[in-house]
Image (cartoon, rainbow, N blue to C red):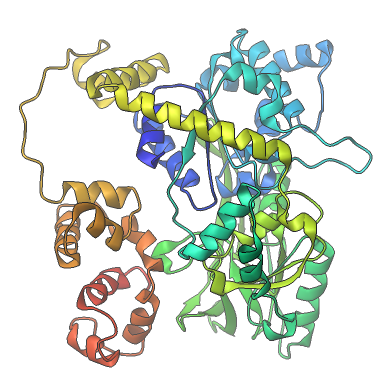
Length: 562
C-alpha cells in the first residue's frame, strides 16, 4: 500500500494498524496525518510504547497519557480513583484520535488496560471509548520487555483490545532507507523466515574483526558493552574535557521521562577527537538522527563543539530542545546538545535511526527482533560490518511470522476496497469524520456546519508539474519519477524549479533526495571552493562522471547543507 492510500484510510476515522518494513515511511505518514488533523482543528494524542520512542515524536508514553504508570492491572477502586482525576478525564474526553507508536514493544495486557481506562473515563463501551486508535509499528522489531521472573508478555495484536478495535491494516510497501537490492532481499528473507545459503553467504562476507572498523559506530545488544567501549575510547584521547549538562523545564516526572528517553545523555563529556552521533533531525543544517562525525575543535566564544562529518563538512553544534506536548501545548522540555558518543550504542536505542555504516556485533543477541533491527539500520550491504552473529539474531518469532502474512493479506484487501470508492464519497467520509471530531475542513469553513453538495467540477487541465508534485510528496527519487512519468531528468528538474517558484514545495520537501549517490561528493566539491553558480566546472572536476542533471539537483539542494 502507498503512503497516500494509507493516509486516505486514516482520514476516514477508521481504527488503523500502520505497518511496514523499516524505511517504508510509517513516521512520515503519521506526521502528515497529524498535520492534517491539526489543520482541521483536531488535536490528536500522540503517544508511544517507550520513553525513547515518545521522545522522538514529542509525545507522552501511553502509560503516562492513560494515567496507568507502571501498573499491570487496575482494581475497581483504582479505576474509580482515576475517574476523580479531573485533568485526566478532561484529556480523555477532549481527545478524538489516539496514536500509539512502536506498538511492537507494548504488551497485550497494557493495551487492554489502556482500553479499559478509555472506556471508563469516556463512559463508553466502544473500543477505546470510541476514539480512533492508530497503532504504528512493525512486530518484526523489538518485542515487549519482561522481567526475568515474569512470563513472556503477549504481543499487542493478541489482546482483546486489539481484536475489538478491528484495525484496518495499512501495510506500506515503499522503501526510503535501503538502496541496495541485495540487502533488501536479505532483509525481506529475514522477515519471512526464508534466509537461504546465498543470503548467509552475503552476510558472512561482511564479517570482519572490530579493530578494522574503529571509525564507525558499533551496535551491541547490551548496555554494559556500550558504556565500556565509549568510556575506554574517550579516556584514550588527550586534551581538555568539555562537559555539557542537560537542563530541564516543567513537571519533574515528565522531565525524568524525557531524560530517560533522550538519546543525548544527561551529562555529555567531549574531547577533540571524540566520535559522536547526532540525535535529532535537522535537514536544513545538514544532519539527521544517526549522522556521525568527529569533534575537531571547540568554538572560542561559547565552547560548543565543531563536528566534522564523513563528507568533510564542519558544523558548530548548539543546544537543542526535546519536549513533551500534550493537550495541544508543551508540558515539559529538556535542553542539551543533539549529540552522543558514538563509538558504540545499543540496538535498542538505534531503533528509528538510519546509518550510512555500522559495525554490528550480534554474538550476544538474546531477543527476537534484535538482529533485524540492527541490520536494517544500515542503508546498504557495503555499509554493514559484522562481528559475531548467533542463531537468535537471525530468528523471527513464529507468532509474528504467521500474523504478518495475515496483515499483508488484510492490507491488500483494504487497498482494493479503497480503490472502489469514488472520490466524492471518500471526501464525504473524510469531512464527516472531522465534523464528528468537532473540527472543520476547508469545505466546512466555507459553507457552515453542513457539508456542501459537491457539484461535478468542469474538467480542468492538470498543470504539467502536478504528477511530479504528487510523486515528490510521496518521497520518490528523480529516477523513480522519470520512470513513472516517462520523462527526462531535465524535465523533472524544470518541474521542481517551477514548484519552488510557485511555492508549491519548499527545499525541505526535497530532503529525501540528499541521500542519492553522488550528492554528497558534489556538495564536498562546492565546499572545497568550486562555484555552484556554474555547472561545467563541476562536470569537468569529476571528468564527466556525474551528469549535468545530477549536478543541477545537487546545486539546488546545496543551500540545505551550507
